[in-house]
Amino acid sequence: MARGRDPLSSLSEREALLIRIFDKLPGMVGYWDTEQRCRFANADYERWFGIKPEELIGKTLSELLGPIYQKNLPHILAALRGEEQLFDREIPDPQGGPPRYSQAHYIPDVLDGVVQGFVVLVSDISSRRKLELQLREAQERANTMAMHDALTGLPNRALLEDRLQEAIEMSKRHSSRCAVLFLDLDGFKNVNDVLGHGAGDKVLCEVARRLVDELREVDTVARLGGDEFLVLLPEVNGRDQAGVVAGHLLAMMQREPFVVENQSFVLSFSIGIAFCPDDGLAVHELLGHADSALYAAKRAGRNRFAFFTAEASGSGNP
Image (tube, rainbow, N blue to C red):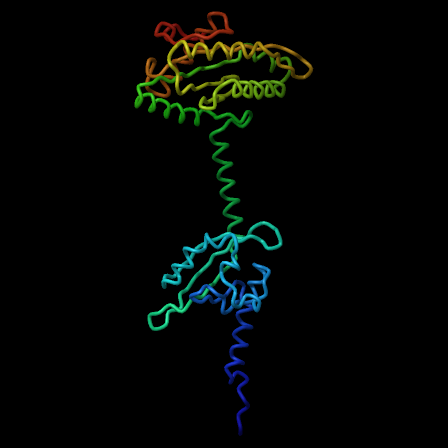
């Protein structure tokens, strides 16, 4: 019995089958020669670049990749040296949509020790990349929440202590000074009691804004909780400069009344000041000494600042 003719007996038929197979693959498959010209491209190139495979034949990688060619060039040259390449890249959408992300695999075609070109395999990793970006953003938000006050957005105690430790180390290296100002709102309890905690929160946010606007970018304003704020001045000449800053903060509170729930009122600060290295070289020591100076300011009548002294530290809180 005579056997039927093999439908793939001819080279052209086998080539046609391979092309159909490559066109079904979920990714780009191409071949580029040593002149970086396309010798084969499957149908997925049209989805990514908006160019039909038959139109790509003979075009260079520079013509195909356009603005991202230079970023790919080191990998292209390495592949033409016979070095396999695997890397991620961003590809602009030809329709003007958001960019897509791919993983490219360049496989050198070496014959008798001579590179003839290289095979390109490209898979779409946009979904993976999107998930990675979402996870990174979530982590950044978590880190921000862990180091910032939820109400005011200011650095919290944890971040303040990190920055204070850095300022202490800088003070040691450069024989310089830094100052810690411990601030407490005078009479803030009355705002909560009379107007409610919602109004109190608005006041705290406004206080935070005023403090940030009043101070330098290199300074840190933190909220420790309740109506307590802390200012870190990483570079000060001494008592006079810190006193000037504290005086400005007191005056700032008097310049403009707070208006909340149709009520207008003025608040003030009591401020305690401690210095590194004069009053300590440890974070908690400096915070404790600034706190002691704060209560000295309150005992002296509020709406004022006081420097830490050993005598004040032993007299107890009011």
